[in-house]
Length: 240
Image: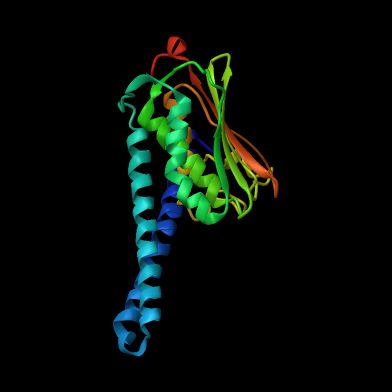
């Protein structure tokens, strides 16, 4: 297949996948709203509240999908600039963990950051790296059962700081590992199921803009670790 034909096929697959992902919450919302509209008087107060709550969750899910599509389109626009600055990666990781602390507690998952006292400052777009951590931690929590743990581990490496987001969750099949960042692909054991299929693609794109990449190691039923490096402030490569 010629490169242009291959790209056209990938684009067609992406449109089909995204259309499917958008249609599912719309169908669910419509079904529950039609039920409420046609049988409201026959339903108990508890049933009405439950159906409204389901419709609201589907609405929120649809909103996240749209936001991810818009963000990925923005990141794919080559002129998108990076707002680089020097910052402490451990402080950012702690701040992000705090955002997920309540959800993790309710889920019964032990969520924590592990970092040495002294790490070099890194040079990156703080807002975008925060989004990477958001996506990876959210992904880890969604696939880690009650009683499990999620760890954000930071350590010094030759380039600057290495960040690892590991969990004790369901893991990823070996055959699926090469595809988890591919926005065009979905698999039976994909970590992206139910998440729009774009969160990990967004994380990978952000790191690519910084001249790096997200790596993944996993074993079914034992857990997964996503990792990436950030350059020390004095070692930052030119943005691309």
